[in-house]
Length: 149
Image (cartoon, helix red, strand yellow):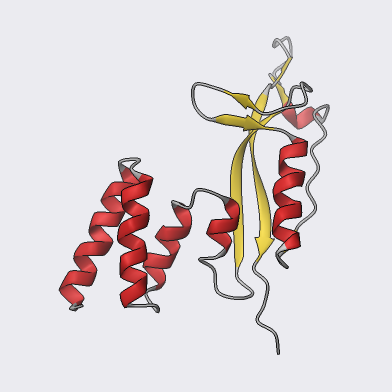
C-alpha cells in the first residue's frame, strides 16, 4: 500500500468517526493497521471507535494507558439506564468492566464515587438553589498488560 493510499484510508476513517459511523471507521483503521502495524495514529483512532473498553485495550501497546469515559448515573436505581444521549452506567457496571479487564491481565485504577460529595451539587452562589446532579462523566483508567519477559 502506498503512502498516499494509507493517507486516504486514514482520512476516510477519521471522517467516518467524526460522522458517528463507527463501523466504517473501524473497518478503515483495521485495514490500515493490517498494512502498516506501526501507524500510531491509526491505532489511536481505532481505539477511539472501539465498541468496548476491552477492544480499545487491544489497540494499546503493552504497558500503555487508556482512559475509558462513561456517562455515570448518580441515582441509586441499581442498573444502567438508557437515555436520549447515551446509556448511563452505575458503580456496578464500572466494577464489571474493571473485573473483565483485570481478568485479562490488565491493571485498573480503583474507582469509587460518593454521590453525596459537595462537588456534585449544582449552585454555589449565596441564595442559589442547590440541587443534586443526576449524572456526570467519569473515566476508568487502565493499563494494558505488559508482555511477559
